[in-house]
Structures are given as C-alpha cells and as structure tokens.
Length: 214
Image (cartoon, rainbow, N blue to C red; front, side, top):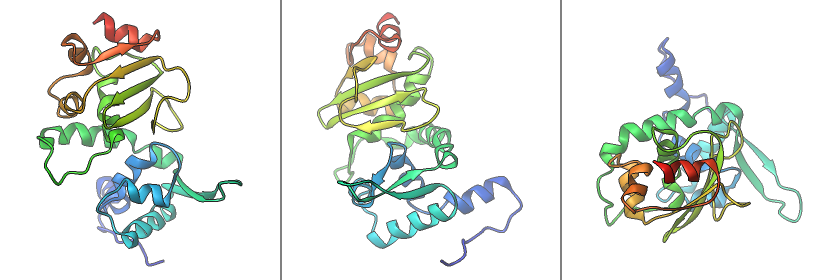
C-alpha cells in the first residue's frame, strides 16, 4: 500500500487531516456509525463514490486504525467493515461539522440524493441540546422516506441504525422530511417542532416525557 500523504506540518489539526481529510472518508465514518456494513451496503448509501475510491478509502481507514474488517459467521459469510474505538471518537467531530454546515444545507436540490438515516446525526444533536431530553435511550424515527433509530447517549456501539428499533423504544417520533430538514438546518429544535405539532411523540421513556413536557 502506498504511504499516506501528509501535510508535513507539526500541528494536530494537520495530523488529523492527514488521516480523515480525503474526500469520502468522513462520510464513510457517518455510515459506519450505524454499525457494521458490507461493502455493497456502503456503496449503495454513498451515491457518487466509485468502487475504486471506496475500496481505496476503506483500505486507508483500516491501515490508519479507524476501521476493521471481519467475516460474518455462516450463513452470512460476508465481510463487514466497522469502526474501531478510535474511529468512533469521530462522532463529536461529525456532530460539530454538521452543526457548522447547517447553514449551507438550504433546500433539497433535484440532484440531491437522500437516505432517511442521514437525518440521524442532526436529530441526535438536537436531542442532546437544550430542551431535547437528556440521558440514554432508544429513539425510533418514522419518516415517509423510511424508518431509522437512534441510540441516544450510547458510549459505544452503533449510534443509529436503519429500520424500526430492535426493541420497544423509549420514544417514537413521527414527522415529515421537511421537519427533519428544518432541524438539520438549525431552524428549529425538536422541542420547538413538538410544540408546533410538527412531530408526534409516543412512548413512556424519559426522552419522550421530556419532549412532551417542554
């Protein structure tokens, strides 16, 4: 494998960009925050990336200690990629980057791809913010574009996942993509959306009660 390119600067920001500054790397991390993924799944949820670039980035990330690759036991017998603890430490980086970029989101363009779980990190950021509930909990989100779930406050393991929650969630949120986009743009937080009747909240967990009580 060719040596990693470097800015050759004695600066922690430059060193970090040596590792994650290449195009697609942080978006691969975004996907792997949802748990182990097969190569084909990653490629499907990263529209626009070529197979060669994706394979190259995954090799670089494995070399740099951000991901590992393992083979699933039968009957799956497929290889999956997953984040290492160091790779998962990029979660606050992606949350901060999403907050910084919220003003750039604007309205969805005709050429913009969309996956429902791409709203996971903005919603996680809003849930962790003022008035959005605190502590740990499982939250299921229902959109017309698809369902996904969030592991709020989890210190390890997946942050989000596709489909309904694997068990009874502490809170279930039903909304449309326009509301999710408004949260992602920073125009309103979940508490405001609930008060405005744009989000239906069900469930008996602390997060659901906190959202209903604001």
